[in-house]
Amino acid sequence: MPDLFTLMFLLFAAAALYVLLIAAPRVQRNWMALPSAEDYAAHHPDAVGHGMPHCCRCGSDSLISEGLQGPSDFRRRMRCANCQTLLYRNEN
Ligand SMILES: [Zn+2]
Figure 1 (cartoon, rainbow, N blue to C red):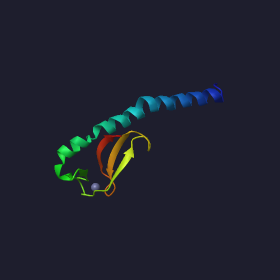
Figure 2: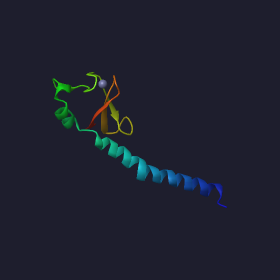
Figure 3: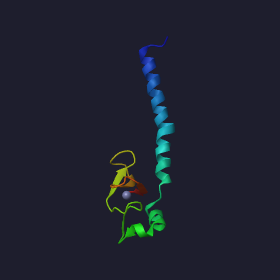
Figure 4: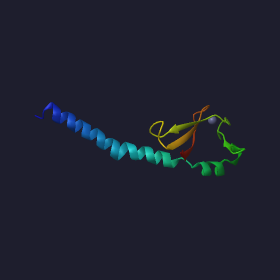
């Protein structure tokens, strides 16, 4: 029977493999599935007035810039502050 240290190591290794092989690539794929800012503007020309994009669903111009995996992540996604719709991706 394995000791407690071995069990904890195996649990940590399984969690690390899950994050590296499944969760992180899924987050990246979901981010890449969002349209770029240029694509969003091309598909919703009425939602880009005076160079400031707004929500194509509710018309709100209050957008939230979210870091994909934390506040400092350069991979950003823009979400409508009113209806919470994910609008497009951005890199800063
Ligand atoms: Zn909205």
